[in-house]
Length: 375
Image 1 (tube, helix red, strand yellow):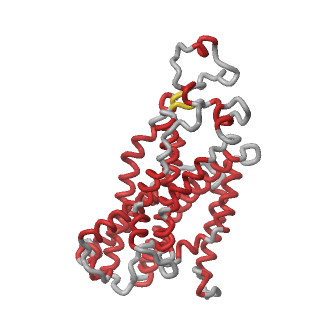
Image 2 (tube, helix red, strand yellow):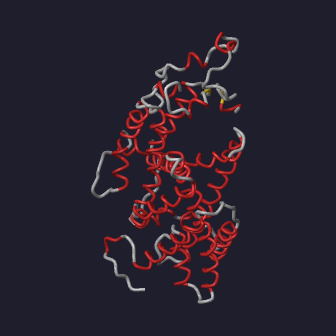
Image 3 (tube, one colour):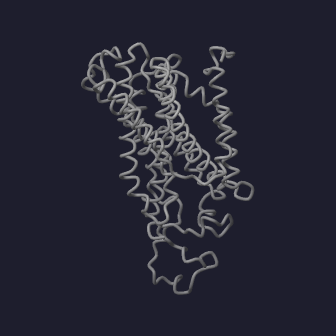
């Protein structure tokens, strides 16, 4: 297919056609209940084993990485900061994983899944991808590093016999189903839940998912995917913005409220609710200020990482960005005083005068004063 786009479009005509087809395939899937699929695991193992057997070893990324990247052997502080950046990038990519903990039936059900499943899946998928890319570098030395799966499948079509096209098709179809499932669950369903929570009278989860699908076109995702260095930097940048949120929630729930809240008051947008009166119309204005304080320190290094040509900062700011998630979490936890004025009542003994007299009109539910761990 001839390309009709200019060099600044960050995509070609065939990419746009594929994106539109994928987007249209996602729309009906947003109306269905998410289900699990094991096809992608079979396809990933098949591609990995084929590449490993064809190369016969782990590839040049393991035997001679300095020659592949054209850099010397990293030692000392250089190696340490690279490792810190990689750890921070991994946290940034999965810092939003708590979105899926909302599906837990009972408090604590998500703990074992997060402790075992997420590290196992992350480690397994990373090993498969790194070894496969390394092997591809060995038997396709004229190709660039094939980190993107679709580039690897295209390289197989260019360099292997015509019979390999069938295998490429089935592998691509399995990964297409995987990406479709991830897009629906991680983007559509999660975004639909958030929009439904903001405007429950007008938006349900399905309507919210469709709105997210429209927004997905407006943000030009191909710019993020196809611009050099921007994709990894954008994934790493999640930690810059999610770290302060984590710190705020941790400080509010664990340090200030000692894991005790009034659930019924959370759903009362009127005078009489502790949270409506303690905040400004239910909005804690201290939270966005604290969030900004947690974000700003990492912004210079983040901007330099995304646009290294136009933005140049000192190594100190870059190192601060490499520490963005733990640093922003700690900055956003500094408010450890009772600024809300709602804890004295929560910490009263059970035989207090108020409880002997019975619950007030806001606490007819047994969840008047409830610990989330025992809800």
